[in-house]
Structures are given as C-alpha cells and as structure tokens.
Length: 200
Image (cartoon, rainbow, N blue to C red; front, side):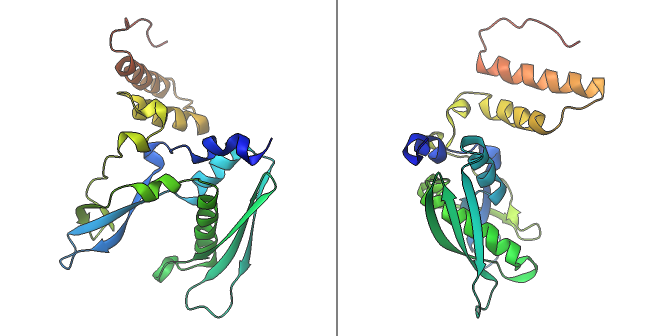
C-alpha cells in the first residue's frame, strides 16, 4: 500500500460532531466571535489508525528558547514524512503535551487530513465568554460533511454508531433507548421505508 492509494480516505471530511470551534477573533464587547473549525489530535490518530494502523508514527523534538512550549513534530505515513512546528496556547493549557498535539494536527494537514477545514467561510457567531464557547455551533456546509451525513438523519446515526464503538450499555432499558434512537435515525434516512421490528 502506498500513500497515493489512501490519499482520498485521509482527506475525507470528518463527522460533524468531531469538528470543534475556537475563536479566531472576539468582538470588543466579547459577545461575538469569528469561529475557526478544528479537530483534535485524537481524531487525527483515529483516522490514521483506521486507514494504516501499522504504518504511521509520530515523533516530537522540544524546541528550546521559546516563550511558549514548542515542539517540532515529525509524522511518517506509509514511509512518507512531513514536519511542522506545534505551539501550546497561553495560560493553563500551555504544556508540552498541548504543543505536541498541535504539531500532530499541523503535520497531518500536510497529508490532507482536515485540510478542508481551512476552506470553510469565516463565520461570526454569538459567543459565550464565560464558557469560552459559541452559543451554538455553526452548521457545516454539505461539501464539508462525509457522504453519510449528506442525507437527513445521517449525522445523528453516525454519532450513535460512534458511541456504540466504545460502549454498549449493559442495562437492558438503555439498550432499548439506543435501539429506539438508531431506528428513528434510520427511519429519517429512508422515510418511505416501512417501520418494522421492535425492541427486544
């Protein structure tokens, strides 16, 4: 397997619930923010694990003499290496671990992972300065969603499936609740399909 064989899969949009929003600029009264879309380092690792689990590696080297914790990252995927610098944010989150996560994400962009997020239009939205978060997350345009989310109910279904990857509740009532949500999501994908079957 070569890098060119998996390029499209690396570049594919992430499920909407994995895309976060951070402020690129905040208004003077701190009630509005220009939001920038981003993914976290774990999403990058999951993407690499899903596509080439035994054929990628990441190394960091601390950059000395910088004001904020800074590292040089080196990501190798299927024998191809890309490098970039990662810097930790100001404040309590300013750690070498944060710098390493930043470096991983920046290196991943060189492989096309999450690069489409830079093409999203700049969006100003209401900002909750206490929570340091947007009042509500912007909707991603259709082209910035994976294929399965470009139909009604797709995002909800994939979020439920993502949860099931990590934990299926032991409690029977909770299992019935999960089943009900999955059935509703599938029904919205195919509204004309007859609703058959019931929870055990």
